[in-house]
Length: 293
Length: 310
Figure 1 (tube, rainbow over the protein chains, first blue to last red):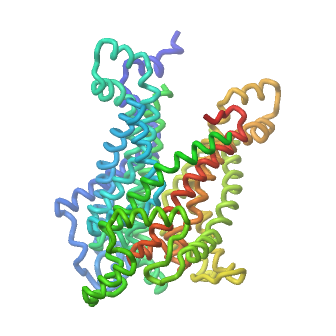
Figure 2: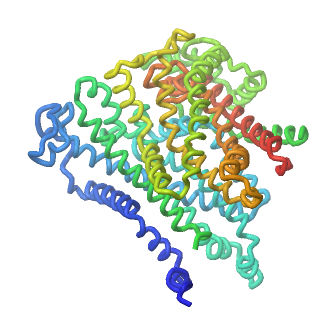
Figure 3: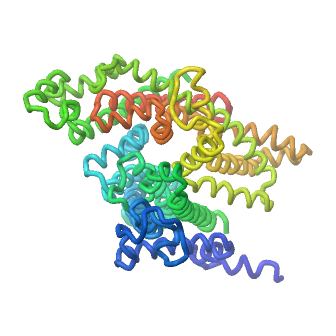
């Protein structure tokens, strides 16, 4: 019978990644969101390669409204006559750098801590649980502020601060998965043939929890971008002016004088990337869920 | 049950030790020197040393740490370095102000969001559901600050519906609170409805739902009598642990609207190196957090007969 052919059979022997990709491709909205993330990453990279004009340079009259004349004027100018568009692009570099750095710090810690706690159990588990219980019991913002004082204010220090605090969620999820998986037959079988603990953790169990890490990564990047804006507003964030948070902090005074374009630009830019990362994270969660074949 | 509660309370001790060590470590080694901040940058070394001695900052660290524990056990955190006020008084005032800002929208929002989530779960799988889920993600994706900024501008400044900012204690201050309430409700709308929807949908997969349908109950009865009741358990878990953070208030709202709550107190005390305030607030939050976690678990066992506390 032809009933069971196409969709079911084609997924047999198919890798999780390829199956996930096929699922992702089905939704145009998800693809659009992935394109948005790619564009922001590209802009961030262009910023590092020096392909983006200097956002600190005045290109016209202060608070000149948007005009279509040249790209620098598309979103108008700020108080110093700097291009809002170029500032937004510089902010994209800051935001993407921050998001990726935070994920790079917190994901390995979360995975490693969760893995050893879940796998070994006992005292090690109790120790790891103690560490994260302490961290979640202290107000998040206090830790961030404290760490950014220690390291001096700036991009790197809030990355480290958020990274050191942000691993807790992933650690909990990884730990729960490891507790479930360590008793499973495939792990038992490898243990019987003499696989070491390290081999069991990294080679056999970890690949089965990677889907959690992928989803956590997209959420971590998004959370970091949102948090940076608020921290910068509270005065502990990025200090060199290339931050969306700074633009929002400047916005109330500008709005009262009818200068709407910087606010509009930064709100829209921030919304697009956070929305895209949210959607991509959700789509990845559905697509990578091994329970749905 | 009592045994369980006692054991859980004992488990709080190591966590509190960790919290005190962390806070102590971060702020005594790396924070601003409060004496220097208080006296300004032109103070003479002698004056600074005198003030440090007065505040007990010249004692050995271990003694300072033990002093910290004595403060915790007697719940008396002394006086603020900066204003000299009694901390218990400052905390009480700050917490009441923060609660006035956060509590009403928390209660109203939870009820409202549950109703919306029920509605969306009722139409699960339809185009309406898919459309709404995009809307919820969109609501979640707007930065808190952008909400504050735009709602204040349009509702308070342009339409003149609310006071722009400020705070007055007592009932006269009510007009100042409406805008922060609305903002908090809108900020929580997207993520909460999404969460409640997925909890409700998870419940609809349970066996008792199949049984209820099999014995011929209408969809309405299934959803409102069975699913909603059972879904309240996870919903409760997520909401009860929020309560300690309500006491602390919202840092952003309090700064933005110049509301003298606990969150504002904490942020400004970090900036001035007011260590007694930092210590006090942090410990209070940590204790409250652990207690409410415990409360959730106990409530859980009371509501759900399947749960055994062990």
